[in-house]
Image 1 (cartoon, rainbow, N blue to C red):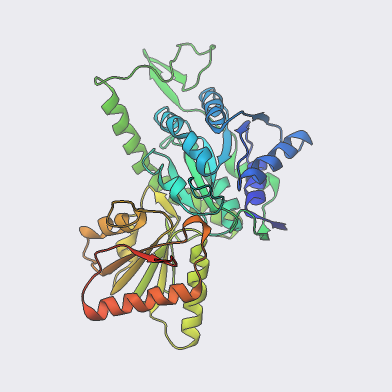
Image 2: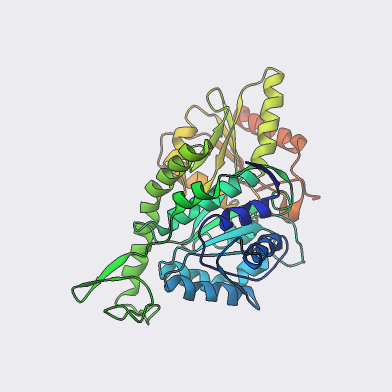
Length: 405
């Protein structure tokens, strides 16, 4: 069924279909539509879930911790300063191995106060041990939220999942979204089944439940004697999530007819490409338009690699996608204060370091605070990249695109 939905509405619709038990949230622009729609669904009986309107984002994620620890399927959403206010609890969620799903409508962090998009908010949490998936449009946001519940709740993973969509550019832009039947989504996500652990020779559900045969404690004091081992287990779970992300993506493709590359990266015109752009989220659509325009003029040398899953980072997939490429332009929509380049740029360079693929790599920071990235600006980056390859001199400084110097 085709519906006209903006990105926020698409996320809310996916949550409505996903057998969620508990929602706790605090409204913040440009995420507010998500929780408004969910409150409507609960109020009119379309969604049988407990909805808690918290007094802050810190309180919202704290409520989610309790509900998820008790075995509920949980969801929340936020943006920018709200995500920053959750920072302390995000690490608790992942360390307690709670498969929370949270939509992040990317927005610039204050100050100065700005309500438009960049990725500084979610990039600040890239080491909080949450799986992070960046969406290009409303359709992908809908599809990815549904997949996120299956990914996080898999017993090999048991990690929280962030689903990112660009503020206003996706969240408030209406497009045709092909939604699945309620029953089909319900059968795909099913209901959450908590993992079991063995305690004193007895298997019990990993939940806070007074009826458990053996009592469990969540969040105990964890000093030097065990803390390191628990962090190592989280890293192991993140690595195991790679197989699960790919499997869930492929299974969803069978019931929906939609896929996004291999679940980690999506490529565009890379078969003939000598140069490539690497980016996240909605900017990929503008890059594709530029590529199409260049092809119409006889230039098929530019391709795109869109990183969809940023955590775990696709360090194996990237070198394969970039084989034969002479130059790469990495686009970051977040700052890099004091670093050699933005977060995506540094991850890409690191992923290629030990590979046999060594193109020239230029890093470009753009679009902070919601500033447009136009096709003309992208064409100037392409020209700059070609010139870098011809000169044989890679750039060692951060390039800022679209800023008044």
